[in-house]
Length: 309
Image 1 (cartoon, rainbow, N blue to C red):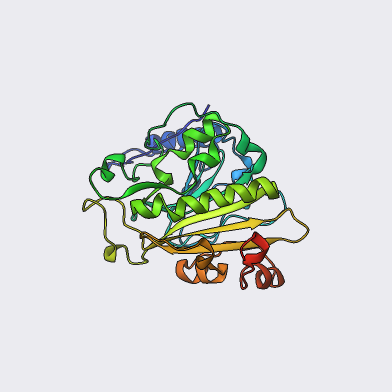
Image 2 (image 1 turned 90 degrees about the vertical axis):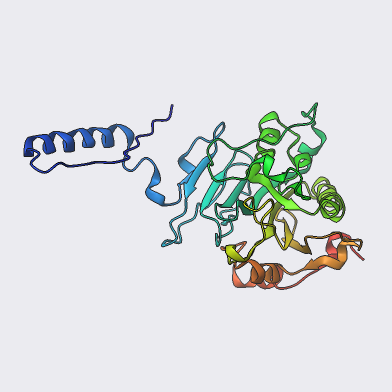
C-alpha cells in the first residue's frame, strides 16, 4: 500500500498561539515517522533498487542541480555493476516501468530516450491476442493525448516496439502508454524504422540478450520546434537506436541515426558511432564505461560484426 501526503498550502495566521504551532509541528513529525522522511523524493532521483515496481511505474522528478541517477533499472536489465541508465538532458522525469525505463520531457511531450533489455527467448512468446489501444499513463499529467495525433499526418511511433513486449500482458500494456510514443512520418515508421526493429529482434534471437536505447532527436530549444496540431508533442528531427551486446566474449555495439522522413535506402547506410549520437543529443548513454571500453564501443563502428557487408 502506498501513502501519499500532499500539503498544498500552510497558512499561519498572525497571532496564532505558540501552542497551536507546537501541535502542528508534532503532527507533522508523526507523519514523517509514519510515511518516512520525504516520501515523495523532494525532486531527487528515486533509489529504484529499494522500490517494488511490479505493478506501478516509479516516477521521479529530476533535480537539475544534481547528477544523481539510479544505478540500474531492475532485474530485467544487465546485472554487470555498470550504470546502463543514460544521463538526462531535456528530460525532467525518469519513469520506470516494469520492463523498460525512459527519460520524459514535459515540455516536448516526448521521451528523450527509452532503455530496455531484449531477450531472444521471450520473442517466441505471444500473449497479445488483439490490437491494443494507446492510452495515457495515469501517473503523468503532461503527456500527449492519442487525440493529438488525429489528422496530424504523423504516426504514433513506438519507441519500445510493441512486438518486443509481446511476452507478457503487463509488458504489452506498458508499451502502449503514450509516454512510449513519438510523432513519426508514416512512411518512416512503417518503412526503415520497422525494418530496423525486425533486424534487432533477429539479432536478439541469435545473441540471446541485447540492451537497447532508442529515442527521438529533439531540439534543445523547445520553442523552435514544430508541434503536431499546434500544441501537441514536438516533432522530432529524426530518431536513433543503439544496440549493445554485453554477453558475448567481447562487448559490441552498433548505432543508427535517421531523419524523420521516408527513406528508401539500406539500413547499413545509417550506421554511425555512439559518440555521434551523443554529440547530437548531449547524452551520455553508458556513463560507467571505462575510457578503453568507450574507445571500442562508442568511437568506432563495426557493421560487419552485426552481419552487414
